[in-house]
Each structure stands twice: as C-alpha cells, then as structure tokens.
Amino acid sequence: MWSFVHDKELKTWIWLAIERSTRQIVGFATGDRSAYCGQMLWESMPVIYQQNAIFYTDAWAVYDGLIPADRRRQQPGGTAHIERFNNTLRQRQPHLTRKTLSFAKSDDSHFARTLNFINHYNQTKSA
Image (cartoon, rainbow, N blue to C red; front, side, top):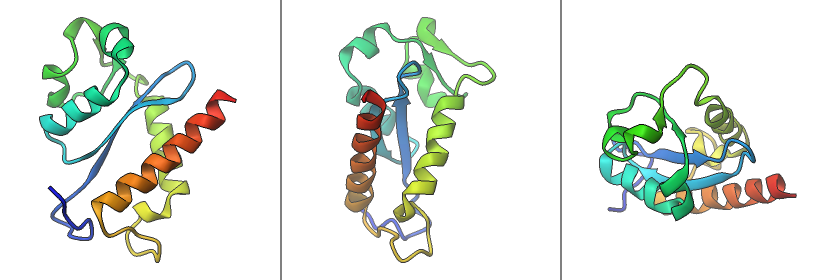
C-alpha cells in the first residue's frame, strides 16, 4: 500500500538489522510496526543470518513469532549499535525530519533515499 508520509496518522517505521562486528546494515524494511513488516525485514537479510545469527532485540512482540527463541536475546545494551545508527540516520538524512524543506512526502522516496544512505554507509564500513 502506498501512502503519503506527511499524514501523521500513517506512521512509517524503519526496520533495521545490523551486523555487530562490522556495523554494516544487513537487513532493511520500511512500513508500520506489524508482523508483516517484521517478516519483510527477516526476508531482507541473507539466509546465513536467518539460520545462524544471534539477534539482540527490544521487547516488541512481533519478534516472538519471527526470530527463533534460542537465538533471540533481550539484555541491557544489546541494541546499542542499532540505536547509534538510528541517531546517525536522523542526523544525516534530513528527509526523515518533518518541517524541513527536504522532507520526503512519499513512502517510495523515503525508501529510496534511506536505502541509498545505507548502501553508502555499508561501503564506508567495508573499506
């Protein structure tokens, strides 16, 4: 479903998965906070992560049905790297901030700009 982001009732969330050792983003999805969008994030990750990785998450209930329980951790500081990246994203991507001239008004534009930033960010981490 395509919607205009400037409608405050239709909130769009950025779902991310980060590789802790390299700090690269290995999964990305946008949408609401539903299980469907959680599944989109899961499917965006390489299969090797889906099958072997340990996931550090918050207590959002969607993760219960998405990530195998034996590979999911909830511990203080476990999400610090992704929270740091979220701050970086907000600081370097003005299209995510309302009431700026560069605010993107469509989901497609938000997705494309964010994906472009993530690709650039990952390239700097692999160098």
